[in-house]
Every structure is written in C-alpha cells, then in structure tokens.
Length: 426
Image (cartoon, rainbow, N blue to C red):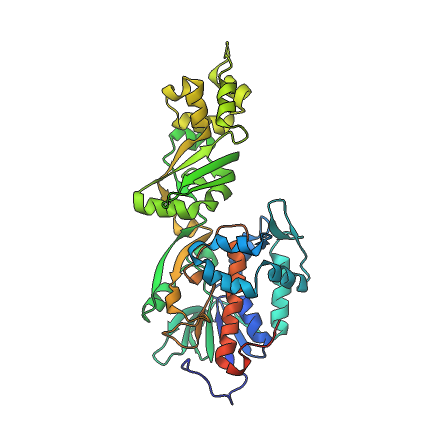
C-alpha cells in the first residue's frame, strides 16, 4: 500500500509506528487516543530497552528549569525543539506521568525523578494503557524499508513480511547502544530515498586520554569528585561546569564530561584534540590556594603538604603528577596554577556505540513543519533520528517524548484536515 492520502471513507486508518522507545510509544498514544488502529513494530524482543537500562540508576525524566532556560539546552536546534516543547514540555510530562500513577519529585540538582526512581513501573503502566487503547505490539520486526510500491518491509523470525499503512511514524533512535536496538541501521534506507542524513556522531560521551600505565592500572574506575572544568569553545566563549567524572582505562567519562561533550567533540574534529582545564580545588580561588601552599613544608613530603594544605590526595594527586613538571611543583604559585587548571588533553571521543546518545540524523530541511518527510508523504520521523542533541539531565528524554507527540499530531493533521488544530486527545 502506498503512503498516499487515503480516501475519507477508509476507517479506521491503520498507522504503523516503527520503534518502541519513548518517542514511538508517545506517537502511538496520541494516535490511538484519536481512534486510529496503531501497530508498533520493534526489532528487539521487547520495547523500550534503552529506556529501561537508562533508568536503572534512577530515571531522570526531565528538569525543573524555567522554560526559557530549558530550551537553551538544545543549542542550534532550540527553535525546532522549542516548538515541540510548547505543546509538551517538562510540566506536561510530569502531569502525564502523574496520570499513569507515577508521582515525581525535584532533586537537589533540579532534575526530576519518579518517586520510585526506576523506569520499569512507568513503562508497565504505560504499556497497559496503550494495550487497553488497542495498540498492538509486534516484537522482533526489523524494518527493511519499502518495496517498490511503498509497502513497509520487515524481517521477522518467520521470514520477511510486508505491511501496508495509511501513515507511518519512524522512531528508530540514533546510533548508540546497538545491542538495545538503537543501531542507526535506518540511515542507508533513508539515504537511498534521497533524504539528507547528517553523519551520526557520539553525544553525551566519554573521551580518550593518553594515560600513563601507572594511571591506567592504579586509577581506572576511580571517580574524581568535587572538581570544576572550564573549556574555551570554538566561538571563544568559556564554558564552565562543576561535578565529577570517572577515570577509565581509555580516558574519562561521567556527568561533568558529558555536559561538555558537544563542544569538546566538535573541537577535536576540527583541531585534532581538545584541552579541558580541570580545577582540582574549586573551593578556593587562586590567591587563597597559593597562600595555603606557600606555608613552609618543614619535613613534610610534597604528598603530605598537598594533603594538609590543599586537600589533594588519591586520584587528584595522581592527576597532578600526570601533568605537572618538576618546574610546576617547585613553587607555590605554579603549583596552585596547575591545580586550578590542570590541562587534561582529550584525543578523541569514545566510539558511537558507547555514547549515551547521538548527534546528527535527518536534516530538518527534509521534513515539513509536522515532521513529515517531504520525499515520502505520509511518513513522519521523530526522536533521536532527527539532527539535534541535548545534554543529560532530562533534556534528551523530554524532547524525545515531545517529538513523538508532535509526529502523532502531524499524522492526525494529515489524515483529518478538519481537526487542524486537532481536538484535545490526551
């Protein structure tokens, strides 16, 4: 069945949602609530596997920032993402969770979590509601594109099958975490239809560092807590962040690094490397730290002097010795300077499949204002498939939910022009 505008007499309309993560499930909910027949297809044995894994350590659903601040987290795509958020932003997401029986709270960082902290209770309640609304799920169905007549092709355990649909929502994710289904296999399928897809790149990722053998063997897996970081972006602005990161065998990862990963990655692509200034003593300014380190050492070793006068021990001391020269260590002012801005050189992002999310994807110019592919009428795209990115902290997940809803509403506008603007459905 080709994806051309159906005759008004055909009812109910059959909609295929391909991808069972939060984006696809939100699109399915919008469409089912409008009385359409909705089938969700996913390549994995069960839906939302990446969502479940991401929530194991505490599901960061969204963030409590004011809307005008929240939208800035999407950088160059703030206008496009902001349009989705106007309809379904952090407040609406929390209200939606509450309707599912999932109460939320704001943590000390401003991040929003379910009271139970996990993703599983929310997903169970959501799937129950979707099934009650008539949504049908098809596991182990890997999308293979279209046949010559525009019919959807799927690889299944029983062999290839074809499905006709009045409209399709593609919500196949980006290119990270392939083992959970987000493998970017859709890229060549769309490129073959002449759809421009920006190269998928790692986002919210770790970076390679050329550690010494001692650093790798002694400190891999060790968190570096209560530090600051500063980085000069390509446009000359200085980006600062506080938090912690983890030393790994290959380099560094963790929330402080993820928050800066986009400009760090972009700088490495153009300059070959990026240097992150690490403040190992963020609680003291340079003058105070210099004064503290200028106290006579007496019989103290340098290690004891650093511990007593600056609180530098363990992995922080190891980082200092990894980068400081004997000249740096010889005078209090030079020692204080490197403790306040340790030059951590990052050589490359870690591979895409290790990243939390991906940048790149379908160029927005390939989509209309309702997220329909201009080259394939009746086919909508949402979530990480599109060319936008966001830091961790609930920003990524919120926009995935919101774009799924936007795509679902786009389908309704296309199928039922009389519903533009659509009637409330949730």
